[in-house]
Length: 79
Image (cartoon, rainbow, N blue to C red; front, side, top):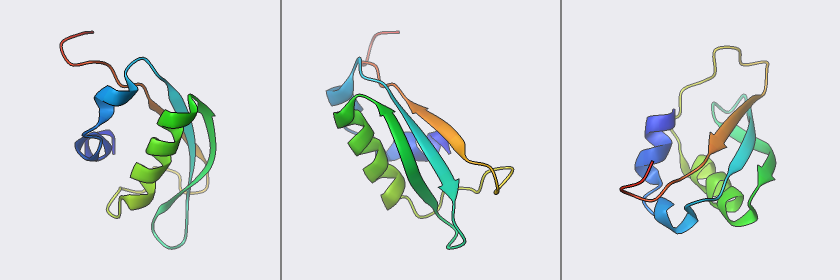
């Protein structure tokens, strides 16, 4: 899941130094729903958008439990 989202996150450098936790719940439609975010607003909005646009993300191991997913981009050449 991380790799698929990273491929779509081509503008990650714009959010360097920001952090966002996204709470995801698996839906019967076969997609994730973002039910909560915590962190830098701009990055959280972008993360929500990326997850909403992704149509082929794998289901979680336990589809009945929400999962937290972290976004914390860094600048190229650092870290």
